[in-house]
Length: 163
Length: 422
Image (tube, rainbow over all chains, first blue to last red; front, top):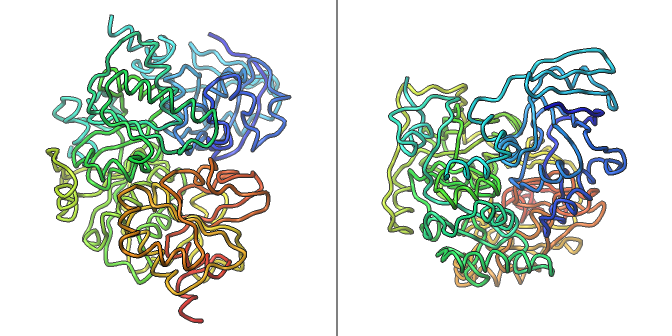
């Protein structure tokens, strides 16, 4: 699988309250959540995001609440992958469990500007910054997590196990 | 190699003799928790599994506490959905308004969590139960759904940071100041993916309520869980609240920690987290002149009986500043009644504070105390992110009940000692 899109950049400690503010959590509808994604940190997000775009962030992306609405809102916005230096742990497992591709990469953030064209090959774990002509490697997922992802999330995985 | 408390509990629940950091395991869980925000998503996922029964009707707790009593029609629909699911599945621990309290105050009070348990909750502050020597951690709704179906959860075995507590906290210093101090020291990702294990001779000077407050905020340092060594106070608390059998796990002498921090409790001062991250801490004397509009005393962090008493100690015979709304939220019905019976409500009302039924409400900007643009609140809650309590242009200052009550009186971020000087 390959993801292609432009980079949308955020810094350290992007928390789930700014990814999807609690005032919208009286709904779990992905489209409704996507309509308010990132609005408290980046009012222009809805206008600039296009299908396939890739969020590039620094440390501790997704910190705070356990709301699965956060990865759901990001995925429903059309984001194809989030690449960060590190992720907060609940956001990390929620993304794997719901099938939002995420990758940890130490270098990409420092070598990428907002709007750069990026391409990610999930099989090889390679990230290309086409605008800058640079290639970055990432750690592949451990086998168990790979299986969850291949089953399109934990529900698919458990369903398969129960067969 | 020896194991930490957390590693031992996880090994036992995965049916393994030992585990190592980084190892992926499938663990049995003793309790699966959800609230009115996360449970509807979990029920949707549960239905996709195509099964008709939960793994154990007694080992699931659903607590509508965030937007409850229902704040609007959409919230009412969400609670209706999980209420019907709970009835259909025969879930024993569904807590309706009137029984309901803030989940992380309610579960220990009802005796549903004890030492040695593995608890997952679709709420990030599920880490609270580490105060009782349990492994408990926040997960998402999908984890909750699969936990309800199978009684299991996957974990990556965490490394651990050891906090050795020494001495005794000074006057006006409580568990909240200690944990804010620690978060300020290691940062909001200082314990990322790791356990925070609290131990040392200073433990004996901390009440169980202090420990709940501290374990509760492990997540604000990025921690997977926070866990306290079990002592006589823990055992006394568990025996008083629960009939469940419990097991005490002690860390091995040769357990490995990535870091050890010595925390001298007597040196910690009243501490406040300034906007917009919990690690942006300042101590008494360095608060500056920050005028405030609201004070909230409550939440899963500080809505327990001792918190109510701390607030009352400050507010007794004093008035809330005319520019401040002071909202006090006892976390459960039991705490509510006890605070009333102890006469604390008379003190609160006499001072000009409002008392609310149990709810998470204002902490996450849900209802019952939302901030307008430019407004500032001192809150005993756990997060001060941008827009957390209302408008993105508002500010939250995290503090103990002592500091919050003192600030309500002066109308600015204040330490309790300032009141004594007057």
